[in-house]
Image (cartoon, rainbow, N blue to C red; front, top):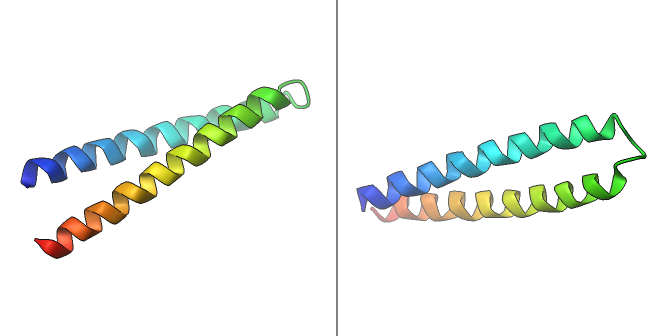
Length: 68
């Protein structure tokens, strides 16, 4: 049970870091706008999917903490 929590926290940290890197990459590309609009759109979708995964992990982590 403890190892599951550690794995979940590690995955959460990994996803948050990846989300931040995508945010930085999007901001960098926006400076080149409108030349990189398609690339920006793809990165924003990827960032949104990561945000969803982060929220699911947070919910699961909270449930695990409550249960035990």
